[in-house]
Image (cartoon, rainbow, N blue to C red; front, top):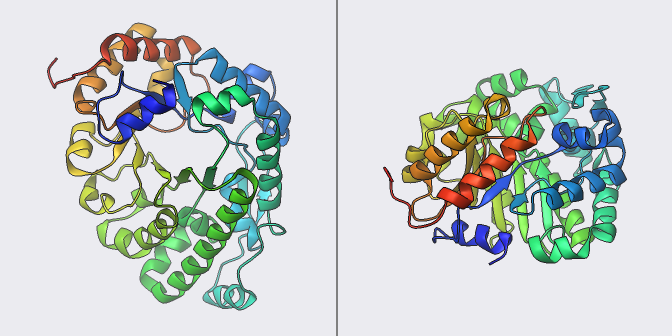
Amino acid sequence: MSVWENALTALRHEEPRTVPVVLWVYGPVLKRYLGVSEYEYYQNVRLQLKAKVAFQRRFPETLNLYTVPEYAGMGIIPTAFGAEVRWMSDSPPWITSLPIREPEDVDRLVESGVPDPEKDGVAPENLRRYEYFYDWFPRDLREDYGYVDGWVYTSLCVEGAALAMGYDRFLVWMRLHPEVLHRWLRLATDFLLRYCSAVEDRVGKCRVLVVADHIASMMGRRHFEEFVLPYLNKVFKRYPKAVRVWHNEGSVKHMLGSVDKVEADVWHFGASDPPARCKTETHFCLMGNLHPPSFARKTPRQVEEDCRRLIVEAACGGGFWLSTGGGMASDTPLKNVEAMIKVAEDYGRYPKRPGA
């Protein structure tokens, strides 16, 4: 059974060969392999491909959900509507020149219509990078791990709409201007779906959909169900046959019943949410949830202890991928990744029962 098939078995809430190790490893970690700054990493798709391939060959027992090109992904929605990306020398970029400051700005954007992902904002550059990965990603890794072909990564959905106006304004408008906010969210989501279709034009029909969106953790149940859930599900429902992953490490334990309505198959959840409750009260295959900074600071022995505890708590009956609860921290020692893999091999065999 391949690493990909093993992960799919667990996703179906069946008992795989061993607990799958599925990671979220990207620029802040991979730049170390290349010996470059984060800015240099984001600007050079060839270096990105080299680093992602090297990491996979270094850890063949793992699956990395971030095996896609990287370039200001958080800016796909904001920049399509007029925002700008400001690059940092050795940190992730951020959004400036917010296009929405007053309700009238939404009227103007709606009147202008849905932008073209082939022309507007950072989307065209992201699409070019998908073409590069499709052309040059090693055939053996595509066949063995299922990478590239049909992989559609979107960052962000509702949170992307919030970044175009600022989180504070987004949250305030949920009370002051709810109808205006819904108009904006409909427009932003329509653009994101056009972008997803453009990615499919490069890599083929969607087989794996990854939606990174953390805004659920910034609000309560009522506002989540009104302003977030419908738009997340509009994206997820577009691809009912794909493996659908929701990346959100922000804590949502205060509304698990509502979170359970997200129509994704996998939830990449954070260290603040209790694994046993999340497993019992939601339908997802859980991915997580070791605290990334703590994972980076601990010794391999401590990592082994944490991983074993988590496996016993959450892996019974399948439906669990062992991972950090969010993207891996930039200073994570690779020996800690080795320790995680070792635990999955030694203690991640089935059947698993609480207290084993």
